[in-house]
Image (cartoon, rainbow, N blue to C red; front, side, top):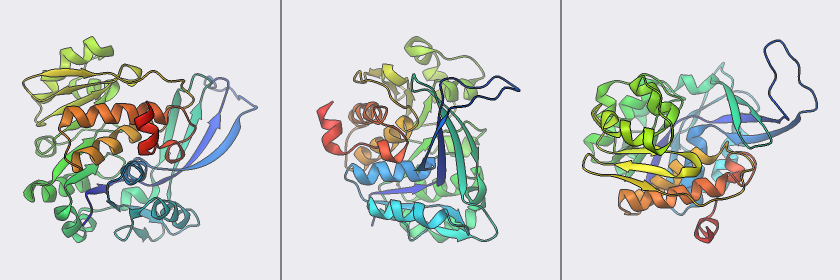
Length: 301
């Protein structure tokens, strides 16, 4: 039995370090290219494993040369990948990421085999979901598959954590099963149709987001930390100040750490405080999975 069950995406990341991003119709040269293991689901599963909780991962790779090395990298970190299969006649997902000197990233994803994960695939993994303490999902796979996983988990009293990334319309039936919903300012703005900026803006929309159905809510605020809301209180959790190298893996480190601590019994505010430190640690290195912290690194912040 795994403490955490992650259903989500797995990608090959192609990262370009650039002095600036091109304007429309412009070519920018002198970029530095590197490749990394990625996909929000895989990153979050790897984060869980590195931080001391057992984790199983359900996803899909293509029948190309990229998929098996990505799965091997997860296995090496301690992630159970038996639920993840090859999708025939499909490419493994890929992400194309530009990173500027301030560490900010812009990402374009070709989902490939990730879109081939069906509700029936989720049903085939139902026993693993039911046995876990926490289910984690994101939105780089079909929404109907995320909903099916949440239905199975909720019926078994497995806690459901959804990272609404990238932001997509989701049914109330999914939102009502979440404990918590995890969003950043952009994702919060997408759900409510209004701009959200900083702690003050996040506080002003917290109750509106809870009114959509989730049992609890976490709004991540980058260097400012996060807000935790449960319907009665809204609490800000600070993040340690660090030197930013690359923000690509911060959100996934945060969610993976949050899930790990919830599965190990922490109350939500304590788990968010730990996750904020993990997210801060992740921005000090390049890439996504390669930047995920160990417990020793998190403890040092």
